[in-house]
Image 1 (tube, protein in one colour):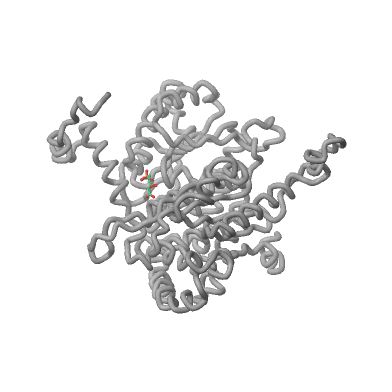
Image 2 (image 1 turned 45 degrees about the horizontal axis):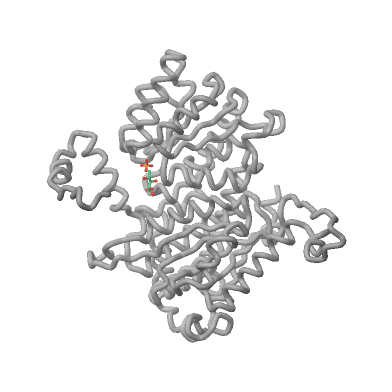
Length: 476
Ligand code: PA5
């Protein structure tokens, strides 16, 4: 196996190039000097120490995931093999952290048209991740599924999220009507072992269950059964994914900002935020990485967007994450990135070697303005355009940095996910906030419970009912 080979690992190491965050390149007004970076070493060191001290504790159980899941991984692989044998569709019912990781990893590591491939080529079930309660979407899904050939996986750590539990109720009812006692053979539950309603329901119904460790929050859960089971079902090597995360964890054990890409990334973002750069654009130049940007947006936004710091002082911290796709968004958002307000840090993700290539055909010999493209490959074109965007941003004094993946494979994706998780943890520590809670998200959940009449939420309902009524005057 390649991923155990140290030389191969080295070849697959991600690189972070932050030249374009530095004043020599992006200009003195916007860029950072070496002196400033080294003058902030204390901030980096403190954050590093806080994260190191927190490893495996409280809500930092995710730092253990590359190391402590051997038995779970075996169970997942065995279950996935069984699902592959019996089913054509695997449907994840979940939202937020229970959905965005599975979507991102599926898009990154499976054929980009996986679900449309014939079964003999696909060699794995189709994957659907249902992360909304839009009735039309639910009906559309039911229109295309052959239930005899479908396994569902309901994923919710709290076991009470309204969206996911509604989906569960709808699907379980349909399954029971169709399969009676055998309905349980079409549903897996992935949830907390120690709390919540889903674990009780799963036990009552006799469902196969996977557990989300207590110390692993939704947005940090891709490398536990939440993400590993769907990945394994669609044929992704989850041991390689975890090996990539472990490799990056090893790199992140260094407190040297020149060695630890998550730490320098965090420091640069933190210092940028201090200068009013309130927007973090994530722009991969590869369709396979498109949904890594969505996953990052949740991780960065939900972790760092906090009203108060750990001392309870109002800080209103955070950076608004924005997803973009290279080259697609060069023809829309890049205009704003290059000429709009100086309020962004743009993270570009590039891929050195694409898994397949296409040569641009010869033609239009008499039209040099078209013919110049001929005989180049599409990978050359996308990577040239990535460099061109870097150049265009840098010459317009726009802060940007680039993370390069030598290839897209399970090992490099494991590294990338873990790198962003560590970077988020360091940045949260620098900001002095609780990176791992989400009172804002829970506020919305509670308001839904109240409006739908859930027991225990009567006072929230009363509070909401007594809120100022909207004026017709302001509606037109
Ligand atoms: O990161 C988080 O904790 C949230 O975004 C959750 O993932 C999301 O709200 C879903 O929660 P649950 O897994 O409890 O259904």
